Image 1 (cartoon, rainbow, N blue to C red):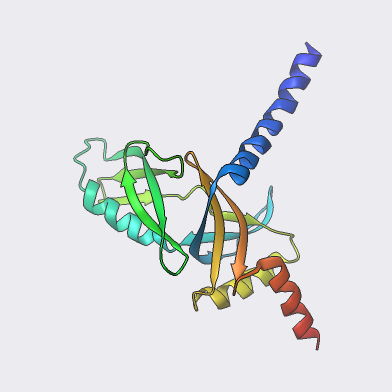
Image 2 (cartoon, one colour; image 1 turned 180 degrees about the vertical axis):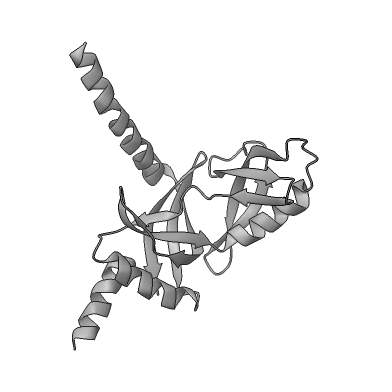
Length: 189
């Protein structure tokens, strides 16, 4: 009995790690422009919260498509599937929004809630947190806030079978950790 319980306890984290690694190894890379903030999670630590540029267009398109829904309970849940295309500038934008799983394996699944009582849609992009060292996260957030307004900041995201994993944050083409080292060194001078 003990061995079975121990095996289950080991299997769950191994599965979660393997699932993310599968997406990292086999997913298609997209560069998505972001609008960040930096909150703190007492259980998981410091992270940079990412709001993607495509979220506004997605929400606008969904509101045109689904509202008002006529749902008597006033609230319903759906899952939508989004595929991306690379633009000439190298960044990704929405290619297609569908209620059916796309034929390609490079899509993300996004849960949405349709609310008739205030005629709105809420959506949460499932890859909106980039965890960092607790001491570097505030500096990263500051640098990211400054650069995202100039469109020099973006997330590198791998997408496969409805899942997505953020592999890095970039500022001026430099990974955030290297960018922070340069920034800290220049402040010391």
